[in-house]
Length: 240
Length: 395
Image 1 (cartoon, one colour):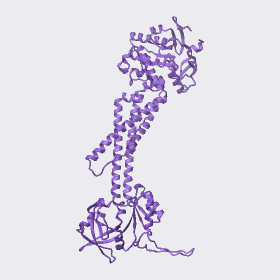
Image 2 (cartoon, chains in turn cyan, orange):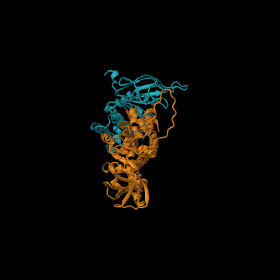
Image 3 (spheres, helix red, strand yellow):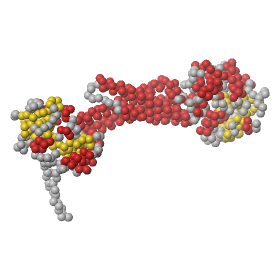
Image 4 (cartoon, helix red, strand yellow):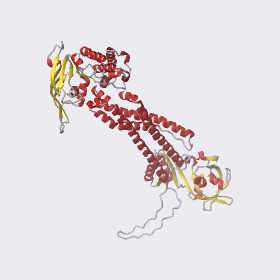
């Protein structure tokens, strides 16, 4: 497999500025180059204000870079319009947020099905089976019809992970997924992400403050003041 | 589907706004039905005692002598006295009008003044000679008869209840009629009717066509043709057409009752105003509830966008919510209006009956739904335009 094919994500000289054209224009990301491989399980670390969230928004196609190019599955994205980015985002990216962000009006199963419903309308039996399978794998088969506000934090986060995986994305983005969970639950959630990243075959990029989590990842990308200061691989990770 | 779920989720809000919409729709439907009922009642009562269109011979005018060119002519003329005269060739005119598709019935009538006397009592009356068979289709006289039976053989007359009271007449009594032509006639009263209009009940005396012609000195002639039309509110248009067609004068009930028409259109105007302002307040209600809903759901909108929902989809969710508010509220409101109408018809003053037209119900449903969608336009747009990055961070 050539490197180009294996790369889920490739950043080339990616820059992001806020307040463009105003006197208080500030550049947050100063030309990042980065490649995420198909089987990467990487942690993005860095102090507050280093631009981690900004970078995650850019990678998730929620925001547009000021300069540089972002290739997702080999597709350049800077020239895409909103509809194009929405489509690509729906097809290839799964999100897990810090505050699990489930839609309160729906039960757990419907939350997991939501990305499919948004794209294809009413879900077919195959989709429902897949969603049930994911919930079961998260140990939540009993809670399929339960509203999010009746689930614990760890359970909600597991529903969110199932939801992120139901579209079989190529890249799973997690923003402090264990940020407001206790240590044990956090470890559980982390393990689940790790396992499913491997099983579904999607790359995982997680932003974290927790050094124990980043240490457990195969790769650690350190972002300081909008620049990547180190990018290290540990352990027997991807074959490259 | 998403929209439905959002509605169910924000149950408190949903119920509040649905009640608001329902009250508005109930008011619109009830007031419209009330006014429609009132108007059709007034029109029915008005038209129950008069023809929709009356065709008359044109007024007689003075003929001016032809003068040479460039001559200044000063004319001082007295208007001519309009003597009673027959419509020329009325049989053929009746035949022609009978063939017009928009005309329901035509009845030749001869009308003129007379004195009705019994003993020393004398009353001025309006002598009306009719062909009863035809005239029934214009004014259903048999329906108004309170005593006797509807028939008009020679020597028979039908009189109004007021006149009967004044002259102390009952069915079977004799009545003297004098038109000032030295040919008084004595007729039998065969029926007393009550049209419900005092003036008509005091003055109308119906005779057979032939006898009236003889009394009024117009053998074989009629002075007017009474018509009914299928669409009463097209009467003025049809009257104009008949005037052009026959060269006679045609006057519709709408011209004759200009004041009534004025009142009716003022009423319609006020109904429309009520509809417009109620719609406006319903629209603002829906818009404000949806605005709040958009703010409350900002974060969820952000998540939906992150999961691949396009701007169009977010827009749709809120537009559909607006439409549903309108539609469901309208359904409740229509049910409420039916209850109000039922209460009015059952326990109300009983002056007239209010029908609820199907078209009115459909109109209310469509109006409320359209208002809902329009009201949702601004909040929906704001939801669709939310920046997902900002929306997700929104707490």
